[in-house]
Image (cartoon, rainbow, N blue to C red; front, side, top):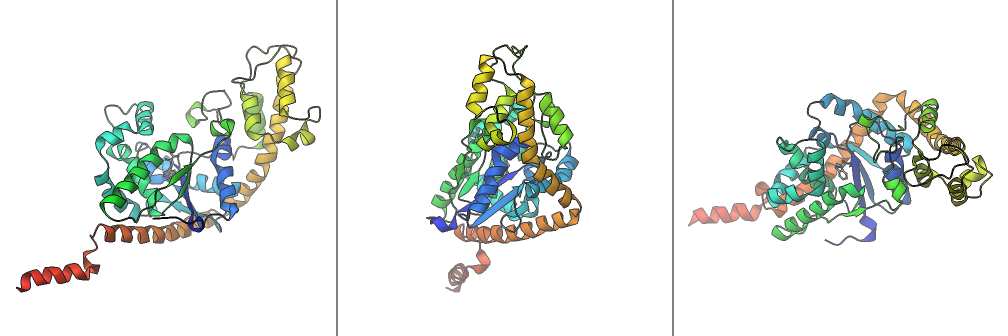
Amino acid sequence: MENTEKNKIILTGDRPTGRLHVGHYVGSLVRRIELQNSGEYEKTYIMIADAQALTDNIENPEKVRQNIIEVALDYISCGLDPAKSTLLIQSQIPELCELTFYYMDLVTVARLQRNPTVKNEIQIRNFESSIPVGFFTYPISQAADITAFKATTVPVGDDQLPMIEQTREIVHKFNTVYAPVLVEPAALLQDNEARRRLPGIDGKAKMSKSLGNCIYLADTADEVRTKIMSMYTDPLHLQVSDPGHLEGNTVFTYLDAFCRPEHFGRYLTDYPNLDELKAHYQRGGLGDVKVKRFLINIMQEILEPIRTRRKELEKDIPAIYEILKKGSEEAREAAARTLSEVKSAMRINYFEDADLIRAQSEKYEA
Ligand code: TRP
């Protein structure tokens, strides 16, 4: 099925296993908000993937339950606007399970075993000898998430590319075996390297709650300041006069991700731009504290309005659940339309199939 420019649809989401941090912000939220506001998309669906989160958190379902509201608060305080984007909770759309069930026939165990994201996650979670079936098959469920809304565009991190690929294969197979009712989605990737993989404040590869190295969107100004002051920089840069190194220097990685030219005019007029600041650091003579103070100013400028909006939203939590309920209901209608087309294509819509009923009658009339 061809998609004209007008009916481009976005779907993306997150597992609600913790509050969102500045890595989520710069790696995906900013992008989603731009897309939402671009006017180029007919619909934007943002899914809180609680059912998927349960596939590897079954020892702690309460964590998932608690974090749904945290993620929703983070979304809306960053600028995802329920008037423009449909915010939904995955488990409230039972049609997704039905789609998953039929898609399971289109995927082999061997193909799932080859999925690099699943492979990697199995390793990280020490699941080797005891993989939950639901976890193993979550790429199929994610294909249901994407196709239920006929999403054309899935903004994700590159760790999710194997999921999109798997979805495209399922769509292709379904459309070939049955009828062309499903839409092949495309991933939309972040291009800025620092934004794509923002490290934790300790310089470790990724921000993670268990490593305690995150700056959360909901952190107070004091927490943000303290975390940035403790950031990993260059262990060889002992004295201000020593030449400094940029590789693996977390403060500079964050500047690559967050700094805009106008920040120099506001907070650090000694330098015209980031290149000059970096050059001075590399030559020697520029201390970490000065660079950290600059980063603190930038981060506070970005985070302050988010914090303020969050504080407001926190005053009316029932209203947030109401937004999620409305979004889930609307999403459910869209998913139900797709499911109905899927069942027609599979010709398992027996009671609506007058030809089938007539043909079966004729068989017995003779
Ligand atoms: N797997 C995604 C993650 O871990 C979350 C997710 C669930 C998702 N369903 C999705 C992302 C559909 C994009 C599209 O971040």
